[in-house]
Length: 62
Image 1: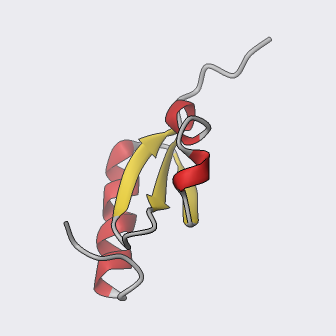
Image 2 (image 1 turned 90 degrees about the vertical axis):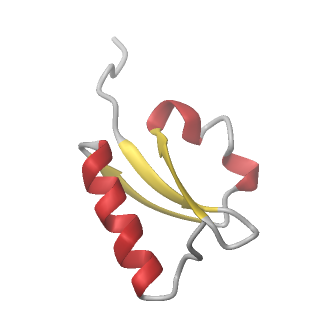
């Protein structure tokens, strides 16, 4: 039985920018990730978290 639930993560890249990716994409881009936050149930929740991370200085705006 596989988990078909899509979760969202905020991932930080080496350049300091944060992206929002699904749980399916996290494994594909794993070597490129320096930090990761989540899982979040919706993409909207992940976007809100990324905004907070940008405001706190943990991520650079794009």
